[in-house]
Image (cartoon, rainbow, N blue to C red; front, side, top):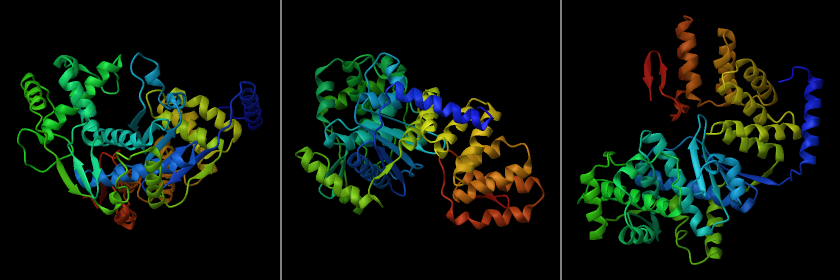
Length: 449
């Protein structure tokens, strides 16, 4: 990055002029927030709906599968294929079916992007499907592709029936395929790569159907009456298991589990399978009001570009974040998240000098940018600088476990054991486990969970 402030200003003017000349259109974006999720969209109603659906997905999966909640989820609701392609370009770089949604877990947040130009009653199953992908990545990180998709298809097909959640009801589309089409060979299923879609819709649909069938069999079949778990313990699809699943599907005796839904889920009762988009819209809007602390708020174009770049920088195509973040900085050279994304890009590319320069600007622009403070601590060779940045990180985010762990280690190595214990005990009660932390916080040599 240029070190001369005048050069930075001139660069911003050049980029701004280029944006106007190339015809970049400005769109108003909105952000809806809750304690556990953020939804961003160029449509305020879509932002409210997605936030509501995320709240419901979290409540449902905690209740029926007893899985730990994810780190904060940032979801993008986009209106067409072109906008989803901007956020997930890898799916358009190769042959294959184009998705309606996609997701992945970054180090600080989980990301989801879904299209909203599909019928509203289909939007919650799509978002729940992607949310389960995030849960699988967190709890079954080595899952093969069939298990990854099978879990999302299995849990994404749950039904809200009055005040009960019904798990295991077979989707008609899957049964029709499994009973009328030739199954994909076992080797094709086992060799399928996670995150790769089949080259044509027919093979993709069959892959999803077979994956759903094996997960249903493993979780609810085989005459099992044991408590339902999020994922099966068996993760090897053998010829014997393949044969058993075919018999299972032919027999058609699919076990269902019905659970009394919690209050949070009851708010959305009847959302799935609504008679019309109008009915579904009304129910989702009601859920949105219950789930959101505030109505969706407009955000600047620079912030919206930075948010989209923030999703890209941790994805499969991190370089795709650069055009967006440069446009953001051309509109607002002090946009904190945009500065942080630039620093993160260089941090991930192991270019410490550039990373340090951009991250320092981000922290100057917004003292609450805990990610910038944490990265600066990791880049610092001086113990005093590391301490200063780690303290800034925990001031901005008191439950940032990894920063507390490093502070404790720093004090312990420096012979300040009592100081370490005071710092550690101070906020232990506020800490929540973060999925991206490989060790829990330690205090006085003891593990605190």
